[in-house]
Length: 464
Image: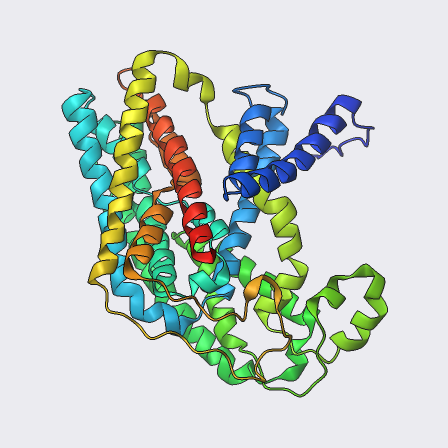
């Protein structure tokens, strides 16, 4: 029988405390500064992660970096879960065909253009060019969702964007299943299970979860005893964890499971008409008004999205989300990007092509049918007026050119999924040396920055 030894409780060293505390503080400061200057707050933590990571100051020990990556991925799952909670199935379903077309185009163009440039112009092998295209055909769901407010997610372009990004995520799993055996042995074949399983499981989840949500709404949706703040919070956490674990172990994307869990919960527990006393969220979250908040909270009929906004969103905004983007920065091998002028030139050129490859999918908006603007909820349907993050605001009306611009720029960012696929495909990307891998990382970095800044400026233009 193996014995486990408890880790002794030693006082952490002062340098360790200073490094970690400054890291947690600076990612929030950098988020605020980047949001004010670039209208893309996520770039601040990304830069802090690069500075603290092994490619620059190397202040984070490997074990701490692994913990930050795990915490950051929790942040990503929470971002996706929140998106599901603020998405209505009624607005998502009609746009799935368009989302599928956008996703397929967003996968085919990067792979095709990668083969043309990397194999045709840069003289890399076909396998290397395919591996690069496979990494760059993904879309950073975390980057996209962090920049889109809930009202924008309810628009036609928001629904198409979310659907396309999720389909890209599943496609990334399929491509990773193709890349993995090739990376281990270039002459190895690809097992059909690696391709069929993610697609089949994703389809089963896409059909089964809505059916379960409909059954839950019929059986439980009207029970007011389930509408307490902490009961709803428990339901969100339990269902979210179950969906993420089930999706991952079944063979599809954990992010797909998190999003479906959010959509299912928003459908299963809709807002209820009630004449009960209401209270502003500012009262609920104000420590100085704790007694008043407790007095009113028992009479509030919470929804999953409202419970999430009041109890999880503050942690997500100030801890988990900044750590997620900072963890991406720590994983970028920045030193390899500047080993030679050839690497820089080819990396920037390939990055520009990959920006165009994803931006082009915005053209699908011009082929879409216009949909009527969703109406506001009934006057008594919300549990709390002025819910956080504009949960109850009507979706804005976007012109076709502006919607196409938003869709194209939002699809550009590659982020975390591209890094995962690039790491899996690294043996193929280094067949002729490290140059091709560095070129791919250049493209991941540039597209993530361009996509984030682009979406920030487009959204700012809508508010002007």
